[in-house]
Length: 204
Image (cartoon, rainbow, N blue to C red; front, side, top):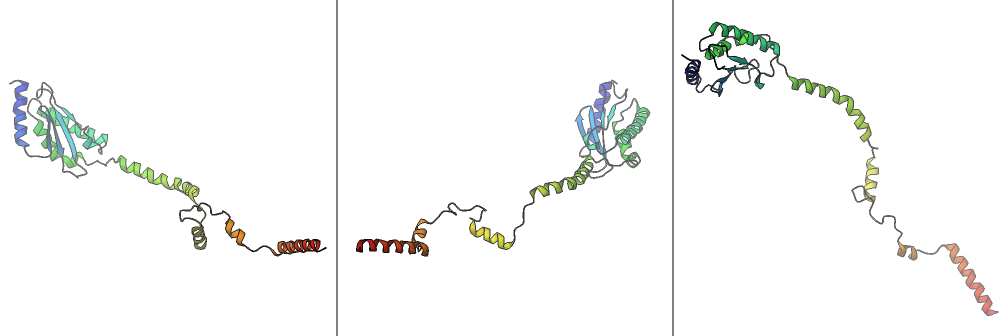
């Protein structure tokens, strides 16, 4: 039986076995993914298996480069791949995709025993929270304004339009009011003296 015939038979078997299994995904007729562990499981990981043209007579390509595995360290990934390669060597020449997926499921805890989640988001947020207190006081000093008392605020509000601006013409002189004001006593006395002198001149 040729490699293509072997692959066709295995493809049909995989589709039948994993029908309705949300953890299984067929990327193409020769490439498959399987999630080991449930969603939300911190020790869950994703395996991708791709067949070469001569598979199963030659090993398939096994990868853990999916985005799903970003929180897994390179050391743990390499350890899992090494153990899967041992299983490949033991099953070379036979349909092994299902066998590899099930092997990973059965040994999930052992594969992930040295797993410590790598979380770059937490690291970045910690850096931001550490740096922020050092820069905040300087900006507050620049923005700090003189605090007014309640009486000063009320007085300022009475003079302004309640928007902090003095109304147009606030310092204009009321001409009519100035004209209607009584004349100063000194000015009246001088005017009266001048009037008396004028009367004396006419009488003489």
